[in-house]
Image (cartoon, rainbow, N blue to C red; front, top):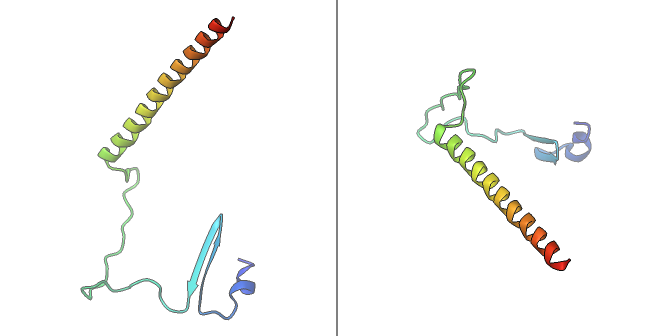
Length: 92
């Protein structure tokens, strides 16, 4: 926050991006307070406590892809280590 006066002093709007922080300000609203139909948008309601935001199909897809990746990694490791042992035996 101490960098804002030096980089953004007197400007109507700015975005400051750092690896651990993003700051945006504007003297005019940079979001829409009315949707296309002219009605005010309904406020976002946070999910009830303890309720996961990830759907079951998404969770299944994530777990399945991680499992398949782990199995493929183990198979590749097995074959590469077997090849290295075979190569060592033939060179002796």
